[in-house]
Length: 158
Length: 189
Image (cartoon, rainbow over all chains, first blue to last red):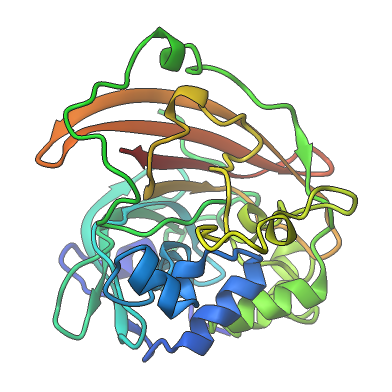
């Protein structure tokens, strides 16, 4: 079991340990396509992708990349915390064969009546450092001497 | 679900304005409640978790990792990928078996919503996602969705005009408990 993470343990500017995935091969992409039954050829059919779609190579699915951000944040929150919100844009392509890293940095903290909210800046970079999936997230964490988070999660009242 | 490439376009309509009453009438349009053809299956969860390379113990057998959630769960976004082709419906892949231009996904499926007819000829990009999570789907649960066109706007870019379509979808379990709310941004150009 993970060690509980409390609101008080977190500071603005903290960087989460990065989550690396890859190199993401054609087999990885095909496995993800099969798992979600998405048969878009730009993820596995190289002749179609290059010749018909005029793309530089097979592309890593946006829906695949977003999973890495979710995993990073979920694991950081632990079972005592809760990943409440995540938002990201698909700004750039990632090609087959790349190693990608999901990252996050704490940008703010907001205590509420029963738990604390952690604001984060998030994204995914490749080995060249190119950002493809910038966004933000909010993770709820309990206070050290406070109650457990409600489950199902109940957002704070504004 | 359409899962489109980023940064490039299928087609272009540079300089063309697309936003008109025929498009805007879709704003606010809601889908019917749609039930996923299968419940949350243990095998499907395993394949999904292994594909995303997240071997979280909460996804497998009952234990401390998922006790808080009432038993084994699926990854948070799993419900968004449960809406697949049911038995007895047309097979797009076979229907296009002789079409070299078929991209594998066909029409711009929109989470239970009808395609926006006047935009049908435009390329589709996956612009991003906003997710709000409330509860995990547990193994064996049914999942349903309900969507609406939240907003449609248009802006000029360096590559011409682009229509921005925002779709909001709520996913609930069989007991009507809210699992997650998703806002998808589709870029049409």
